[in-house]
Length: 165
Image (cartoon, rainbow, N blue to C red; front, side, top):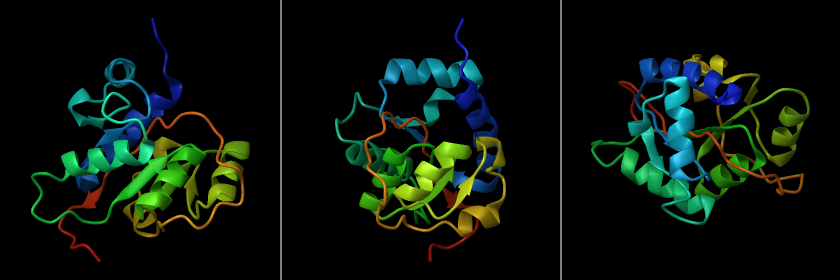
């Protein structure tokens, strides 16, 4: 039996985002088989998994591919917000020019801020505030070495009924 605590909170956040946004997807620097197991264990539909390390090597390519797949049938993709919990997520958002919302507490939140995240919530379950997502910014320059391990959670988001800026 597997227990995925972070992903469990992410499932709550995904449900909240799905009620607000037209497009919600998952990309990960992990392998597809393990990502599907984690998502299905916590009740997140695996059809939301748009790209993994099976699709590309570089994280920026994985997330770019996820965005392309997520928005393929959208007439007008809106603002993209990468929601993540690692400094790799911050670096990826910066390289792609996407807005970023960090998720973390304590030392993890400090690392995200040092990496350039301007807005951080303590838990994935706190993603339901649309005004929070609208305040997200493209991360600034890093002030901390980007040497942390794995990217696990990200979402491509478009507010329902809202035009892109």
